[in-house]
Length: 180
Image 1 (cartoon, rainbow, N blue to C red):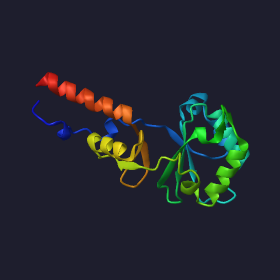
Image 2: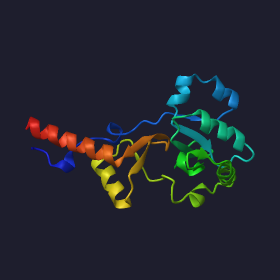
Image 3: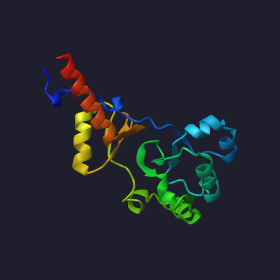
Image 4: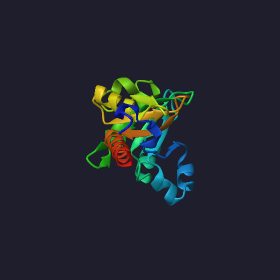
């Protein structure tokens, strides 16, 4: 091989899982989405600090009707990324727990998401132009399996999974070896 592995030039976006998202709006808006659109949404965006804006019933409806939902993304009032929370945080077994949703909404209004959900939130992030080797180093240093990818304005772009990063690096090394 002519290039050392640390010189492989692969950016984060080359192994990133793009997670289709939508901001939580009215229930009428939700019902206006096509079934295909509802199935494809896997990230629901909520804004931290909005008081009396989100209701447990409406959020419960979103969580039930967006079957492919995996994460709730929390943004600040300026639209910048704060955290990603797995949907499993709001379930008791396989069912959505309305008490947990109520607590979550209160925590969201009080801008206490990072404190309340510190064990489960995904906050570690990189920018789109970060190399995959560097991304993997960050994951290993922090002992995490997921890393958020942001653009230069701190807007969510996708998620890197350690498994995908490792596979992409190995594939690239093997291809380079075959071409040498």
